[in-house]
Length: 131
Image (tube, rainbow, N blue to C red):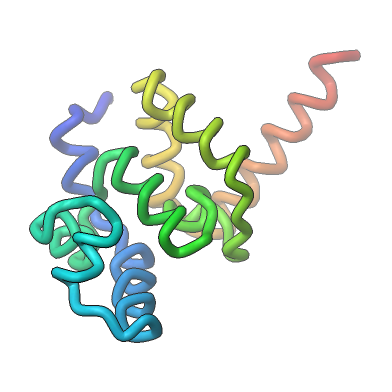
C-alpha cells in the first residue's frame, strides 16, 4: 500500500526533533532566530521540533546549518557525517524522485536492526549486479 504525500509528511521523526532541540540548546538560539538563520518559517521549525517530517529543502537547510548529513537527520545513520557535495546530490535525488523519497522516509521509520539488514542487502545486490 502506497503512502500519500500527506501521510508521509505527517510521519513522526522523533530523532530529528530531538536533534533540533539539542542544536538550539547547544547554539543558544531561540526557535525564531534559528528559523531566520536557517531560512525557514518558525512554524516549519516548530513542526520539525515536534518530529514531523519537513520537506526535502528544509532538511537540506537543517543539514547545512547543523553540519550533519541528510541520512543522519532521517535516522538512516548514527554518525552525523557531513559532506556538502554528497548531501546536495542526495537532496537533488530525493527531490526529483518522489518514489525514492517515499522509500527513504519509510526505511527511516524501521528499527535500526532492520535498517542495517536492508543496507546489507542493497550492498550485496549492488556488488553482484556488476558481476
